Image (tube, rainbow, N blue to C red):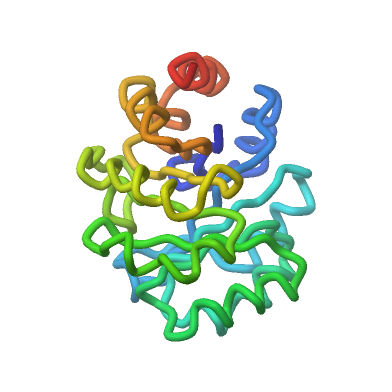
Length: 211
């Protein structure tokens, strides 16, 4: 269970992280958007560095940005633990995975719902995680895309049982059983958690649904 801060209260992000940590969460998802690769803009390395001063959670960063190779070092220095980038934004994805590893971070690869799974076939086995987007990247609160979720099956066939398969987009207690049945083992949820007044209860509801 990985809460996404995209739907959190940005005025009190440190407090939001503390609340989800109190629910036993170990990892938090940081949605990084540049206004170019996707139309929205969120946070950059300075905000991540400040959050790192207030949290020991694992920072799972999702770079929805153009030219990710230009920025991975800055995010690593800011304190992220995992760096996931889009196959559509990288001309040399295998080289970028090596760079991320050299920076001391784990690497993830992701792809837009319209992109075929085949696009990540070569790079996915080099990563620690594959992120399957079940909405279009760029905005929170979108409707879950069942046809995109089904790609988890193909991804799992490519990477086997030892690489994490994460899903992000429209994850809630209703959609959780489906993606788990496809082979996902890491679930990112934003509005289903931070859109609820009781964040802890919302996390527990998704956990229960995953079983």
